[in-house]
Image 1: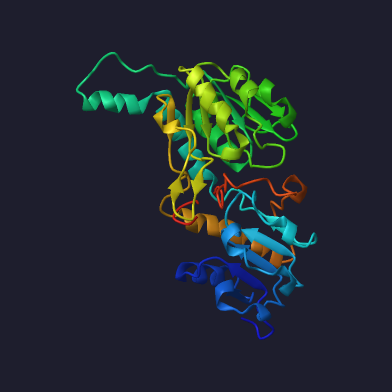
Image 2: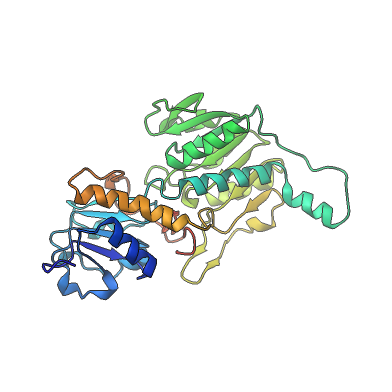
Length: 349
């Protein structure tokens, strides 16, 4: 640390691997863990690296950091970030792409497992049955709509293209991007969903995406379609999805994100009995879990901090008006997400 105090404050659990990596990537930048430094010593801080904003920033008084100009999250999503406590001059960036390869891989795994009805297939094997064979939904030659064509969305599109799907994308502007046959702007969501046999939700939870998938959007999808959500649970109307799965037994859903996530005690408390539905497949918000994931994500976050301290423009600075006032997240803490949301053993990315 420089004699004048730290320029970077790391608000995350103090770990040896994090300590060595930050030191190696920013050797000329004085820094400290928040837990190891009294708030009276924060006056020199220009940037922060934050893990779970909900947990790590709960007791932070930003008035103690008058030089603060930039906050970089370790996780991807910024829904639930306390923007209202942060001066308007401070920019915030999510770790966009930090978990993308792993979440995209999991999304396609969920799609394939749901499409091939693997849980029922395994039940048949356990019971010693060969027939009747489960009803398969094939990917080859089908249309896959990818909602949110960022790093995760592009990763999903690449993998689904390799399996023979035709890709339809949705982004904010509708501007074409590599890998899609058609791209739709956000305000033409239903048109993009029309007849899609596979739908991947990978959008962030913002004021405009919250509960944007409801009855009409679900009805627009193929009645024998497969819906996969690895983005944020809050972009989907929970009651409408449950009702749709009940009334459309041929429709299938595969979810990695949930409305009743309780990360503080590692519990999932869903008021709707999704797990009892035969056409629902799920995983416990673990799309970004795996060996090497945390190191990969940390490197991506530090890339942006290197840019900041080098005088370059940081990437992926969010438009805070999309989140102010904060999107209600009481029942969808996201990937603190997810997650981003916790990716890996930490609490979406």
